[in-house]
Length: 223
Ligand SMILES: Nc1ncnc2c1ncn2[C@@H]1O[C@H](COP(=O)(O)OP(=O)(O)OP(=O)(O)O)[C@@H](O)[C@H]1O
Ligand SMILES: [Mg+2]
Image (spheres, rainbow, N blue to C red):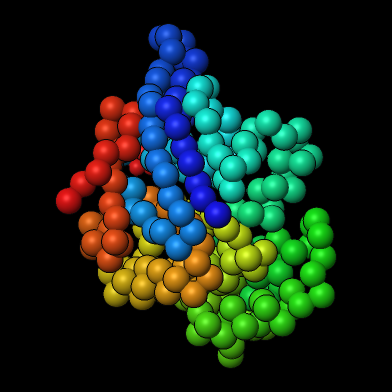
């Protein structure tokens, strides 16, 4: 189980010419590894995460997850690959307002291969994120930190290999951000995912064993 990114490039065509956001970004991670990616606004962190999550295609270079190049797949197979192997957490929770907490966590299991133990696993995840007594609440009936914990449980419900989070604590106050960040790392360790978190918070980044900075379109190690 590994993530291998080689010589990744991403250009956006703009009216003023081509904008090269990523240039030769390299990354290698194994199962159980976690990484915090920092860097100034506009440096390409979300662009990188979208490509790792197969939501966007690179202009050049390769991404391999477990040795497989997802971009070689046709669109329906790519969607299946993404659903099966990749979990996402965004700054906005993107929970469905009409659905309960439990139903929201089960959403990724409604497409693709069904697993008979999905509901049991969803309940267990919600217990691990401390929301067993909120299963029937709607998102509007939760605090910001609780909503983000639901998003963490939802990202893990398909037992993904790769867990990607873009500013997962960006909307939370400092204490809540710490708690959610810690929970994310704990669940990552329990499930032995490959975790990549983009953050502007050096406080959150410090809790990660490895940190890199996006600069000049590439990933550079930071102390
Ligand atoms: N679809 C697009 N077309 C053209 N340019 C784009 C597109 N998407 C992003 N960009 C540009 O690419 C650059 C990198 O954007 P990106 O969202 O990856 O930055 P970021 O590092 O995540 O920033 P932030 O910390 O503010 O979230 C920005 O300058 C942005 O304007
Ligand atoms: Mg961003």
